[in-house]
Length: 238
DNA sequence: AAAGTTGTCAACCGCTATCAA
DNA sequence: ATTGATAGCGGTTGACAACTT
Image 1 (cartoon, protein in one colour):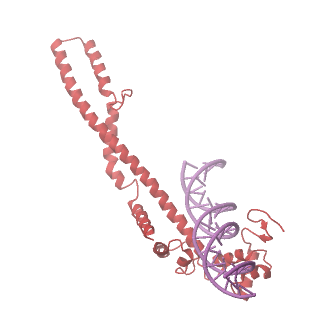
Image 2 (cartoon, rainbow, N blue to C red):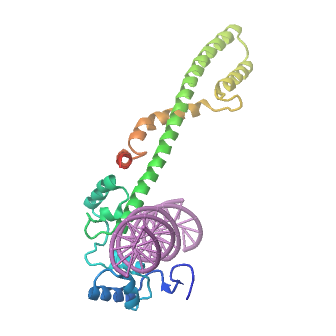
Image 3 (tube, rainbow, N blue to C red):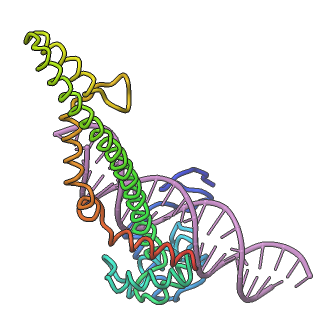
């Protein structure tokens, strides 16, 4: 009696792993002669080195006549979504309403597609939060920039007035302006950082351009959000 | 072109329900 | 009523293909 682990290996004498065309042929011939059921005897009688469970699964999911192959149609997808809303993960029950489709197929479909949507929805949510945060920061920066510009204008006015009154030299005037520029360009959020005004303005104009348009058009797909929200609601009520 | 990631699907595992002895 | 065998179900895994970086 062999006891090994893994597909293609044997445990308690039964073969495991992918079915060969020869095995499929043996199983199909046996079922066509004796009918479905008695899967344990299939395993013993049909010269198949497979357990009954494995035989049944192979027949039901792959060999049974009338099985459809290929992608599910949009109609079938709709049925799955609706029935899942009613029965949840009752795959075999759902499969009864989709002739030619197996519970395994439906289960795989649901898992693949629903999980994917959930995942992408999470990404979209994260991106939304990121953009919202950026926008809030930008609004704050813009406000501070406006305040600074007012201060700058006022200072320029004062300095010009001072210089025009005092009639100082060009060198002295440049030096004074340099100090003022450093003060104005200092990032209002941090005493240690120094960000050029131009950068603030560029960022502001970029966000004004991208802002809401970006949110509602290219950055994510609202249709998907609605779908996922609906599906979640439907599942929650199940 | 190669390596890494993601998607798909077949098959297995463990559990429960059912039924006959 | 109990017990063991079998069928069926849902969750999970592994292999491989397709796609992305």
